[in-house]
Image (cartoon, rainbow, N blue to C red; front, side, top):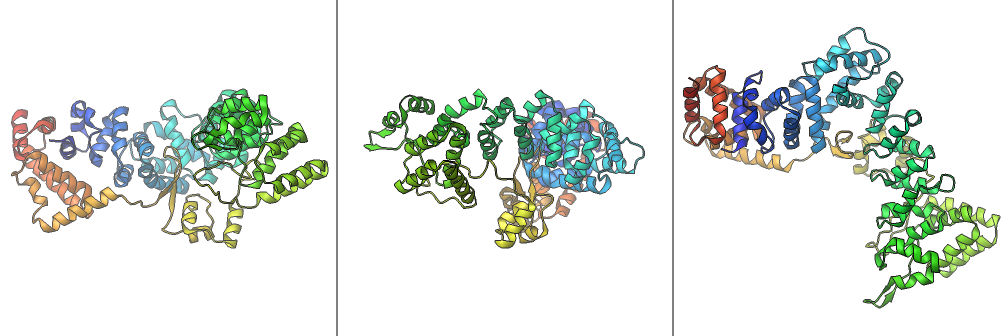
Length: 585
């Protein structure tokens, strides 16, 4: 008998207190990861009696929103349920996000932004044995509490963060003055949707160690990166620059400020020694001659590393670099540097060089790049005009920022430059609504924006296929359809419905005693998972409970023996129960 079938029987044998599972956990625990999801009743028992390792194994295989929704509504204690759902979210975001939206709505409706209610919630959290819903209701109906919300006990720190992150952004912002500074930093670290001023204030108050942890955080939001960069600390900027979760805008900001905030040696080393465009291309804004060349290198056709190319250029200029880009097989000479497709990137690089090192360095870059004669002549005219030419180049640069980048003639050679990132402010809802009024957003884009709490009505009305769920810790960042298509579940439901119509008395075959116990329990498990309607699964569970009661009675010992024998038993289901009853005496 496979363990998937044995788990289905164990769920049927267990009682409301989970005593059967508690007795046989040692023999079943090593196999918790073998079944594709477990019955909800068994997960409830595992939450009550299992170890942390057991919950991680079960959660990794629980990719069923129906199961997580039922668990949230029925299982306890609340801390263990939140912990289990968090493990589910780490492996399957939707199975966490869909049921947890109900908790979020309940927190908003019952607790709001009342610090006393939230402090009562924290007081009840460690020892509450009921469901999460009952926990929130008890906190809302209680009395007392304090305006200053205390630091949570270590045993529930993660679950407390989990609940705070579920609060509406406006309510969470109102609670920030009542929270301990360490709790606020923890929320920022894990991506709480807080206004930029609150995030900036938290970052300013943080210790150097906390700031460094924020800079390397996986879930930090853009407001957090902005606050860290605004501190002007080269060492912090280096950590942000190296963070794979940081975006091009953050790296471009660090490079664009290199004249005021010196680059950390680690950042320079990463740019010069990296073939990764995400780390190398932003250096085009730096105003450093060597780093700008590293950003503009035609890496696809060079025969040595980026660092060797930069060193060669520093000693011999572009002419010494050309042999490194000669393709002997194709008998073709490539230019060492590429010209950015968007003119704003080129003008931004020239302006940065001009501002930091004078017009001579800007002229040298024009000489090194394979520009058209007319374009190069126009740029040299600006250089010759001095301050007036500088102002004219700045004005053209600002005009070019508003234009779309042209399509590359060679799409297989992506350049990776991001335009307007260093100084362009982050767009707000007003900007999006105005753009939507001028040129309506595509339905798919509007649907993604519905995942944001403050999504305006005009954009929400333009969304196609309903709404989206926006990922948040512990689920991976991104967008999830409110009702995603599950091809495996759909296929199995269709298959079972077909068998149900073509095979008379299919459900009763579980109890006939004419097939091996493994096959009977496999059919029972399929009906529980994929029954065409919930009533059919409920009737089958009731029938199984009566069947077990007929053979084993109400005693606990016989059920424990049956559960222990099930995985290795080769007879029929009645034979299994008869053997277990005899062994139990």
